[in-house]
Amino acid sequence: MLRFILMRLGKAAIILIAIMTLNFFLIHAAPGDPAAVMAGEAGAADAKFIAQLREQFGLDKPLLVQLGIYLKGVLQFDLGFSYRQQMPVSQLILDRLPATLLLTMTAFVISLLLGTMAGVLASARVGKWSDTAISSLALLFYATPLYWAALMAVLLFSVYFNWLPGFGYETVGANYTGLARALDIGRHLILPATTLGLFFMAVYMRMTRASMLEVSQLDFVKTARAKGLKSSIIQRRHIFRNAMLPVVTLAGLQAGQLVGGAVLTETVFAWPGIGRLMFEALAQRDYNLLLGVFFVSAAMVLLFNLITDILYRFVDPRIRVA
Amino acid sequence: MADFWKRFSRNRGAVIGIIILAIVVLVAVLAPLLFPQSPWRMVQRPFLPPLAMEQYPLGTDALGRNVISGLAYGAQVSLLVGLVSTVAALLIGIPIGALAGYFGGWVDDALMRFTEFFQTVPSFALAIVLVAIFEPSIQSIIAAIAIVSWPPVARLVRGEVMSLRSREYVEAAILSGQTNLTIILRQVLPNTLSPIIVLASLMVATAILLESSLSFLGLGDPNMMSWGYMIGAARTVIRQAWWLSFFPGVAILLTVLALNLIGEGLNDALNPRLARRGK
Image 1 (cartoon, rainbow over the protein chains, first blue to last red):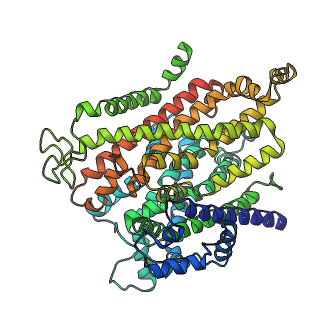
Image 2: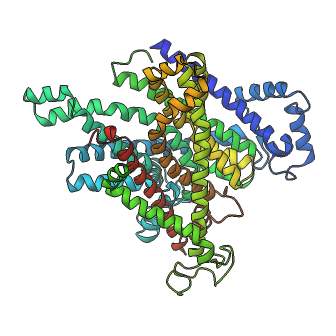
């Protein structure tokens, strides 16, 4: 097991270095002077800062030396300086990371729980109206643009019904503490997390339904029925546990979608996470910050994939060496 | 062919999908005739609600532009980007998958590590970075979407080619002295066409969603009216003018839904043995 984890860590490290290299070449491939690209929109930064960047990144040296300097910096978690926000990029990201982790993890749990539950329900009632309803809903969620669902949720639940806050992380100026604050954040979390999880909720529904139906045709299930086991036990112990395997694989894929989706959701809900930070970086053409957020999101996805890989080995005893 | 249509039309959803998509295509093609004026032009007072004036059934936006005209021109962008970026992704993914599957060994290893890299990187975030750095334009958007969406094609083609590689007819072709390129192009790839077509129809849908999301964030082509841009521009005025974000969203939803339904129908029609599995 330890060897497996070490191997996966090594692989993740290689991918991270590849992403840094990609970032480095993107800065150089962009139209214009790399120093100006790093500083933000050309002309926005003063000459002194540009000169400083030139020296720091050795921009007059050969490309490979520059790459070395850049990689060394990133490995020390020095992602450069955001000229626009007057703060180190790594500090900006660290400040915003907790909000994004809270949002994406909640979205993950909501989509996984509701998605698999609905999928199991639909598979148990194949062809009945509840199956049709769930399957149609899944098709609809599958085709809905994330940011539009978010806007419509604000319109319906926040503006029209006034049930839930549709803006921000907590009530500004309320100064709640302890449990009251947690509840307040929780209320602010419902709409963003649900809309962010919507797409994968649909994916889990469809996958669980199909997988449950497929497993229920297998021989060992027939044997269990022939033995006279209660059908609820067969559903739970024989079908569900085996049907969950492809679903766990999907969970790894969802990480990437959550991180990308967070840019849209956080923009709509003014959620103070790294997705919103990416949107701000876009609006201000702060490329260094943009690439920094991109790097950290990729690292988050790698970490999540690592965790699901390890979990998968616990769920499926058949896999011992990946 | 008749057989294909019979199987395809047995899927009711797929037929509905074809009808919706046909309408979207028709609107996109006829947009310049239906709305001769540029969709960027101010035609009435701002924030005219839907159904208030007959000429502007879906109202006007914050700058007094005709919403329904924007929708029609937006259909052009969505379909264009969806189609071209999918073709581009196929042009990257098919050769990589075919080479990896056909030659195996270290070629396969190297190409699959490369593919894995692109699968691990969060695709939407990468697309944002690419479009932002190379300046938003229809070309950079198409390129970015193609770059983030080819890996599933490569994986699919690789798997198919690997299983075909060991068939007797391919071995016969090798023995008859055909070159590797001829074998891949003439013998192997044509047999992988059905699953590629199904995947491609779903990729067009994903590409349309991606384009609209990029435009929503302000990364659309500044010279082309698109659905995502319309919603993005309406985001801050959603409390005053719901219709500005509602209608373009419905347009995206219906188009993407139609393509997904068509994909399922194609799957039924082209892979009849697989299609009914689990149903």
